[in-house]
Structure formats: C-alpha cells, structure tokens
Image (cartoon, rainbow, N blue to C red; front, side, top):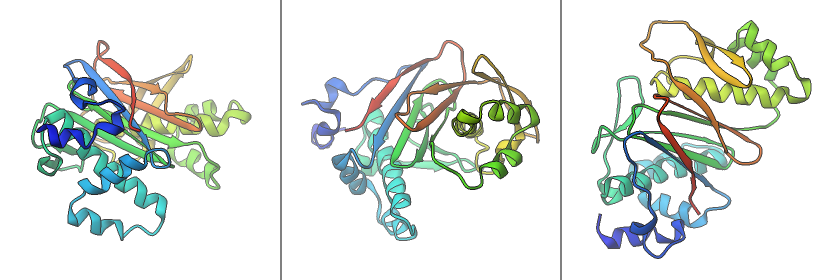
Length: 251
C-alpha cells in the first residue's frame, strides 16, 4: 500500500504514521477490532468512501438507520482493515464467499476474518490460525425472550439461563453469542440455528457437548472478550496455543 493511501487512515489510529502502529498479524494470533458508530465519525466517513457503488445502493434497502449504520461500518470497516493487513488500496481488496455464504479474502486465503454488529457497535476478528467466529450482542429487553430460550436451548442450557432471574437476560445473551460465534466459525451460521448445538457450562466456561445435523466440526475454544458496557461478545477459534490480542479500538 502506498503511503498516501495509508495516511488517510492515520487519525483513526491516533498516530502520525499508520506504519508505526498498525499491528502485524502473525501465525498463532487473533486480532479483535472494535468501532462505534456514535463514537467514530471519521471512521464512518472513511467506511462510506470504501463502499462500491453497488454497496452504496444497498444502503437504501435498509429501512432503519441503525441497520444502515451497521452495514456501512461492517462492509467499509472490513475493507479498511483488510487493506492495511494486505498492504493494498481499499478499492483493490477482493472478497469472495464460500458455498455456505461465509466471506473470505481472495487476496490471501490464509487470512481469516469474521464480523459482527449489534446496537451501535461493530467488531472484527482476524486470524492466521484457521477459521474464526465472532459475535457481539447488545444486552436489551426482548419481548420474545421466553420463546427464544425455549426454541434455541436444551433443557440443561435453559436451567443455566433460568438459574438466576436477576441475571437471566445477561445469561441469555452471553450464551447466545457462544452459539452464534461457534456457528460462524464453522461456516454454518447462514443455514443452521443455535438449537443445533448443546453446550455444558462449568465455572462459567462453555464447552460443546453435542451437535445435531451433518457437518464437519472440530473442537474449538469459545472465549468472552471485552465488548464494552451493555454488550456481550464471544470469540470462537482453533488452538489452545493461539494468542488472542486485546481489542483494538478504531477512533
């Protein structure tokens, strides 16, 4: 990537030269990035500049402003970060999709990534240690909470969620991000639902116990990460030795 291309991203990293502070992603590492629509006006502007004409047109399909903002930050932010990891101008970044819908980098197939958004937050995970899944959820009241718990969780899982009425909503969202991040990591998030997975919970650690359906899966690690106040976030990945870096904040 040319210096001119990098300089337009300088302010969102808070340094004079992006080359000095943009982290190098090594094998065995995962980087998590986070941005907020309400707190990152420059980032949002740069995201819009990175969208193609087709992607700009898609913004008009979203009825609600929150959904528009999430799409804008997710797609534009992904191109910004990929361009910096790949050392390419953002308009040269090429993204493909696997047969099951999960996006991947056409420029470097050993660079894995995943995205999630909720509320005014968007998070990105980048890995060179195999496929990764990330999910974030804003903790918010849900009218259909009882129905969602009944439909998507096993009896043992429901017992865990219902064990504390005061924490019931938080337990639901935490458990939801565990299941969603796992499904996204294995590339099945587009066609399978959380009820296909059953986890056991011991000392607040989640471990996959059973799987419904016919798809290839491996033992994976699911860990919570700091997603900010009123949010839960979970990252799912391969390898006990994999190092998960702290969340990098886009200003």
